[in-house]
Length: 377
Image (spheres, rainbow, N blue to C red):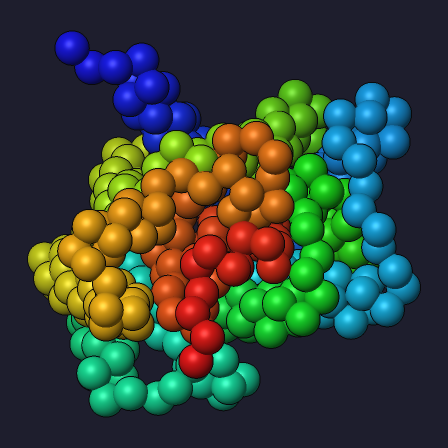
């Protein structure tokens, strides 16, 4: 018999995969000129940020669900603002890519996320350039190049937008580690949205005012309140599903579920959007890229094991591994069980924080959680 706790874990995983895939497919459907025809990605992203920030405000200030953190001007200016800027940029460029390339190809390009994050970490000094990890990154890049070569509807503009979004997200993740490790800021998903969503909205307003607003013809825009409300609700629900999944799955489960989600999403996108065609080269290239990602994660996990004290007994090591793999109630400074990891394709051990990489999810790890996941160099 499967225990009730295991069933709940599977249920949370299923909810996360469904919501994460749903947000991506829903955004594509709304933005695509062939379907709902709302080709205004910055406007859509601002709707998400505005709605999420408003809900977080009511949950914190009106309903008192959680308490706000002690946010000084210095922390806000040096941490929240730059992280929000890169978060806004990653959403802007990522959503704009839907106008030009297919969901399947976008997911294949996202295999570059570990490459971008590793390079940014090396540049920022939070990781060291090693030959084995570098070769893995070359393998991932080679696989993505093959996938791109096999893409029937390859579009340079869309590819540039997506890759730029990946770089912006990588910078956000590295900045989150570099800046917040020093501050020890403790934020859960609600307080993350409370501080980051309004700031991201402001950053998005600038490109919206310069790029989208001048060409907006209100008479030509389809605006369905139920469509946009449900779309924003899906994006918000994704944040909370991530919050629920963190405490019920371990690092390995998270990564496997993330890969499974990507394959499901690629398959679903070809059914929902018939114009999205997958070729053999697409599949071969993506498989090669995933091999590189898997090897990268394996090497990082090996680094953690090798950093253990040499005098530890096998039982002590097993217990430490179990504690690392177990759900961690205080991982993000949370008091209750949480869970967020399905989209973490590039969870990093050693000098890195295991972070969440997903659409509309600005979850910020706290120093409290870092202490159990990192080793001093």
